[in-house]
Length: 406
Length: 199
Image (cartoon, rainbow over all chains, first blue to last red; front, side, top):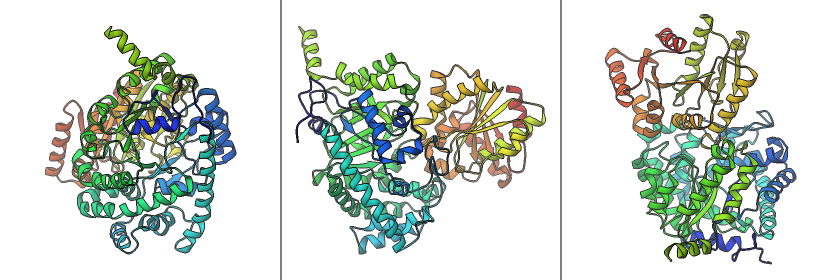
């Protein structure tokens, strides 16, 4: 494929740049990657429900890319079929255009999808079919409980399979399109880590009881799923052609659990999985929502140069750089409220600081803190994208350094 | 325009308390109130009843609390001030919201709020369990409060009640701690008086 440079001064392709920062090396410049979904609808003048239409979604995203971009790394994956979202977040959901007005934002409901006996079921099924346990957990237990119309047993497989295949093939085509325009793809498919899956599927009210009464089961079931996480990734990676994994950690932050609980119940299976991926040459994107300040030290246990830690604006990203920046690539974290309510000069100042301090020595991706706010100001988004050209070239910084020394 | 934020973990009784509080304020003749609900999963405030009493009840959707709530809230408050000019907005925050994040963003960006009162609920039945398991979240919700409401006191005996009140006073010594049963209405009048006086 022809190599496309996104900016005239670039000496690397976006893919080379992404690989360099994951390996904690210094690239030609800091890469930028916004997580865009609802913002695209608002910017393109369509409603949020229309994003389920692949043509409209891609057109809206293209408009953002050509007006406000370019960006280096394509991040968001549209499920297209609402039922597929359950593979990513195993919770009941209210969707714009379905249960909610068309311009609303998706809402997840805290209900009991995972039953307490599912911990034992996972351990039993993982012994019988270690590669398929995760897949079976969703197909046979959780999805029929989330979606009444899907049905149980073979009906669940019959309903989900065609949708999975069609979405997978569409993602592949979309990824090829992004690659042709010089953009790297972040990961093959979003996935929630085991501990966090349990927390969401049980519902917080039930899960807090489990945290007291069922600690061993949580840890053992999470561990039992590692093999099937790896196998599921291999399958999805084969379809989408991307060799980077993603693990969302929506419920492992210090906003929810203590650092001790993280070390005891979430980290062991997470670490094992990141190590397994690393052994396959696959880096892992850790989507670290919430405040992770007290978990940073523990993340040093993950293999060096094999992961990205994505911060959403709640974690002190400067502290993250200091504590784990020599082992994990840091990504983030222009906050949603700054992009929605701040001025372009404030955004510019914050991005400059991120590039200077967190980008020091490489190993950094500039990004929106989690998803770009739907009401982000377009001029602020543009400033964020342009900041990597304005401040992000490492040779400029080296020259500036030399000038200062001289 | 003033803002009252009602926070507290899932199932702590925020909706019941809010409904009782609003009914009390309305019976005293307080008008021009708006309710913003961010907890769509739980039982909803009795919208039609409250609307019939001249209240506006709105839902504030935010897919991912960390990303979107605070920014949306600032915009929504600004719109409300312009269109409805309410005396006070009551925000029922999501059960997993960190209240200090909301306050920080309001402080930084909102010019429409003249004063904020934060009421955090602690669930008498689950307080020990939550402090043991989701410590950081519950601590942050309680520490951000001006008034901590120990709800569901009808489930406690005298000693247990005193123990829990002391625990809450220890976590947030600066806040007033009020024992309440929102469901039975015990001591709700006391809370309504405080809020009414603040308004």
